[in-house]
Structure formats: structure tokens, C-alpha cells
Length: 168
Image (cartoon, rainbow, N blue to C red):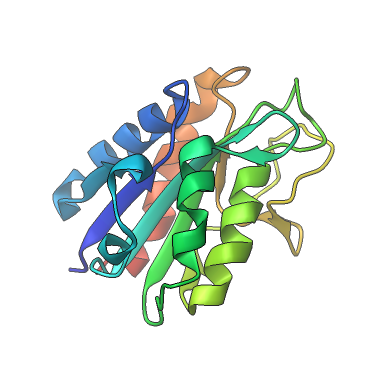
């Protein structure tokens, strides 16, 4: 079984809440749960699997703690590591930039040599545009705790189940 770290950046608590739900659903894998504000880049090189979460702010901006951490990503070599992304967005308030943070993280982490897993279909989501889209799918799991909190648990459950094949 691969070691797993769930690392999130959260300003209002929505992404932290999602990270905690993911950790609970992966409890059998003993994931480590950490806030990006409390880590150094070397900690990202230890686990075999990284599950990274960030929220999107305003018009497509990355959460502040991730923004601060961003320069350290350039120093990472994550070749052989598996990365899955999740994040919070507001599809009603910002339909043109829904879950952009996922795309921002994807683009930066793609330069580290990691392998991404956990893409999600856009089916069931209502939005106009997102930087998190690649080949018609989201690069990770977008959540809208502001407008669709009733779907958070089922979306996380389905996503986590899709990831389990990469965790053993």
C-alpha cells in the first residue's frame, strides 16, 4: 500500500472540510492530512500518493496559502508520484472561473513529472467555463459547497472509490 498525504489550502473551511471527508473515506489507507500553510516542499516528496486540494477565489485566483507555496513547486521532482486534485469553487457566483484552482495546480504540478489520476466528468455540473478542464473533463474533483453541499458527500465517495485502484 502506498503512503498517502492529503494536503489542502482552505480559507473559509470548505476545502478543509472536503479534505477531512476524503481522509475519513480513506481511513484504511492511513493518510496524513496537512494544511499547505504548515508544510515545506520536501514533505511532498515523501508519500507515494498526493491528494491536493485548493479553493478558487474571486475571479479564478488560487487560495492564498497555495499562492505563497507556489515558488517551491518548481524545485520538486515528483517523477513516479501519483497526484489527484480536488477543490472548492462557486459555480453560481463565478460560473466563468469555476474551480480554476484545480487547473492552476495541474499546470504547475505537471512540470514536476508526476502522474495525475482522478479526472471527473462535467456531467451534473452547471458552469460556463473552467481552467480545470482538459479534454472535456475536470482534472480533479470540483466541489461547490456554497450551492451544492448536498452533493459533496456522494461526489467525494464516487471519486475516492475511483482512486483506490491507484493506492495499492
